[in-house]
Length: 84
Image (cartoon, rainbow, N blue to C red; front, side, top):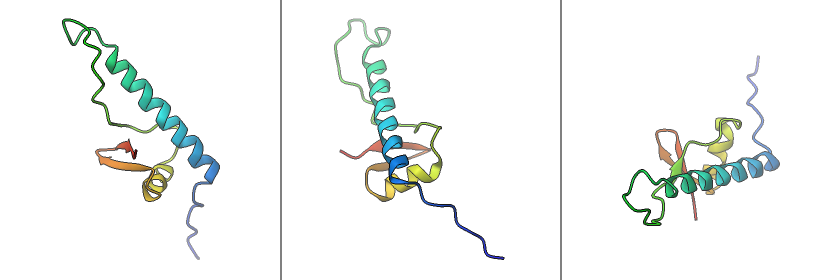
């Protein structure tokens, strides 16, 4: 009996996953920047968020493939950051 490896993620799935990652990162940054409770006056400072948990609707293999391709960087502890 041969063990079959799961099929690698399709290019279309990788594209959708990267788009979802970018959108979630953008929303996390906007949410962080709009927090009024942190500062006495809203200073309009940039967000310090650089890494997030990837969307759970895509498998771990998708994120590992995007890291292998150099589009994302593994920041550790399940967090990924966008390679600019």
